[in-house]
Image 1 (cartoon, rainbow, N blue to C red):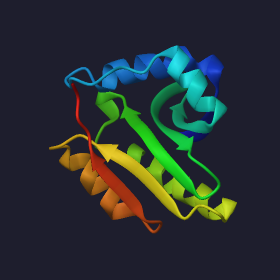
Image 2 (cartoon, rainbow, N blue to C red):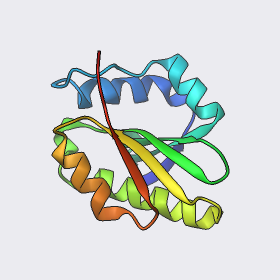
Image 3 (cartoon, rainbow, N blue to C red):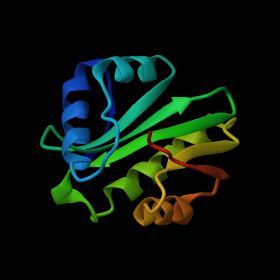
Length: 135
């Protein structure tokens, strides 16, 4: 398994990964257009094995001092194996390497204990969580 920087050419794989990862949740699915917009002011980091995308994290660069985690998705068969943890730790390393990032924000759906545990266990940079409301 290896980290990969994803690009617009990976949009189909990202959309498919999210569709599979969130099949049991009532959440809006990311579109190719949203991926392209995100990539214009952020990045998507993935974990691949044998060229198959297993997990990814989407980061929006709000400004020179703040990043926002837009989403993390992992294939159902790979969930619970630490891939999201590895991605978040790598994002934190990248933030430290950049040297100017003072906070990372995210929004977590109410009741999503896995995400709360993931984020609270990994942050050395302050994280600000909002409740996610779906209308």
